[in-house]
Length: 419
Image (cartoon, rainbow, N blue to C red):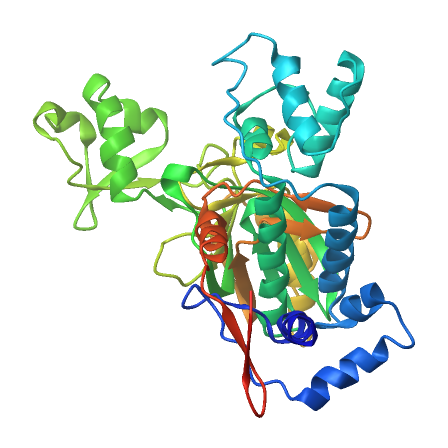
């Protein structure tokens, strides 16, 4: 028992997973004295309070640890997974099928009527970051099919990510992909928060760390080769005026080419550079936030702003589209203007936008940007199990579940095996 307690305390403080090697960590040395000191604390506080005391003092960590503990107390940590189908795939007895799953997860009892099933399903959807429409869509089915045990393991991994993270700079941008959110902090205070649209499963947005060094008003869009070949070329074969209609220009070795003079039917891939001109029609919208990276992704505006109303926002080719990007730009420039001889105030920025032409604004001090992947998130009043849309944590959960060998607790004088 002493060894098992020591393992729990060790994991809560030192972490249990190496996210670089994607392996469960070996347990570091624990002295008998350290174990006994922790046990002695139980003379003054409960086991729950003692365990919740462990780990970093970070507010997000504390919220998540407390919410996860309460969640495990409230619901059975059910290991059952399911194979529910969407309403489109199977429209027979939808509520009956949902009821069975929610009963297994201890969200409902056998006596629940249709009204309660619908109400509970909506609550479950919100708990999983899905729009509460009580419909069996793809994401709702994915959330229902996942066992509660796997959800708890994802939350445990989220806690371990928070344990292992280095302290971020006082000013930075953080994007959490499964949450579809962008946060801008300055002086360790949240200054701006935005919904984002991220890459589709077939065009996944990468995790990376970089620095935003420039904000560009009315950007050009240099269309990637893959998009030009797969999407623009077929349209050009049908209509030679397609490029002009959508404000694109064609270049070969930096020299402009007239697309109407080319026999597009002979091409199977795109041999030219396509550049979309600045304007409200531009796929990057009116504002772009630039940072160096090997994936050619960035944060930008979009003409398709209606998609921000959806709870699940995975539609792009990999870049991150930002809601209200002009407000984000103004906020970043406000905190970048300290010490500038000519500050870029909101009024100055608005004047630049009124020019309606390409206008890059270099930042005096680049802003670190962290693009991360954490599917379980805690807020002050709740915890949300966002969909693991890219299945990046599914692999890690599998490694935790597949860890069949016994971990060894190393003390000063001996190894004590524990399951």
